[in-house]
Length: 235
Image 1 (cartoon, rainbow, N blue to C red):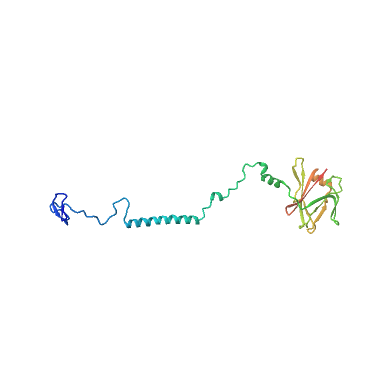
Image 2 (cartoon, rainbow, N blue to C red):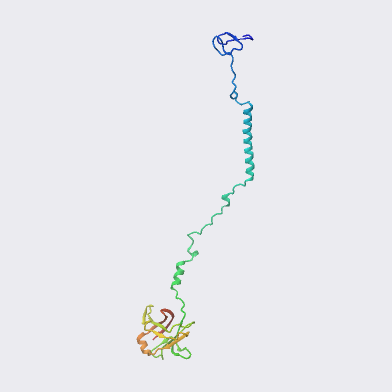
């Protein structure tokens, strides 16, 4: 190969130095360097690639720095487990009976307790209409007694002109026998008074025959409501 000719590497024919292919066999005489494409090495060395890589690295570093700054500005999340109050323990269902008030016992005691009555019955052998007082006060009567009288006393006026009286005889076991019903024991009173009474017109023997002997309980009702109760004996 001279300065003006190029020897074909395939057939050995000499061709002008400017020839691109062999005029004898057509073999390419000059390798055309590629004008485009990326670098052939492992790491790019061209200016465009280096600029792009530098920009990407700068963006990554900037994101890391921004994250560190924001992490210092935002307060840490509260510790929910530490701030949540512990639930208040409920009393044990198996508490001893001495620590738990018995509702049933209280209700039972209230139910059997007799309510206080507003009136009081006073027994005796006579009734003074002028002083409105019982004479010969007693709760024990016999056939020889001079009479049977009783009065009712209230804190407020009686409020009605008639009351109903019931008399029962108590047996030893507490059994009651009605000896005078309310309907048969109506008495007339002064509604404006707080105390009123009367003496029975029946003889003691008649009362003894009608009521019998024993412990008696007189109950006085006003409009069907019990307002007084008293005990006496007949012997």
